Image (cartoon, rainbow, N blue to C red):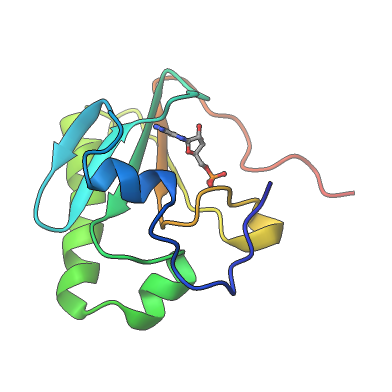
Length: 127
Ligand code: AMP
């Protein structure tokens, strides 16, 4: 079920638990600002999630409320993960779902990083 993006940050969400080490993950990269790990239900040969360490519900929340350091650290971590996985050539896709129409399911900001095969057009037709 998509989340309600107007709710405050919920410390019991699954990615908060991963950040606290309460449930396992397959870590790809970690630094002061971000954690990257394999998606549990991969939609492409490479499907990694990158999350900020801070308590942000979504991209909307993060872009409005995070510090410049947090934003720079997170964006650099996403780029670093893609490079370290060898995805820059031949290319990859970033995706962040936000709220109901975005079909966001976990209420902690995450960027999906997809690669490892040609990914096709961006979205299905909308008509
Ligand atoms: P979204 O629809 O953008 O909120 O995507 C949530 C993603 O989190 C989905 O791709 C899930 O497969 C993934 N996911 C949920 N729980 C876990 C978990 N424990 N470890 C790794 N990925 C997870």
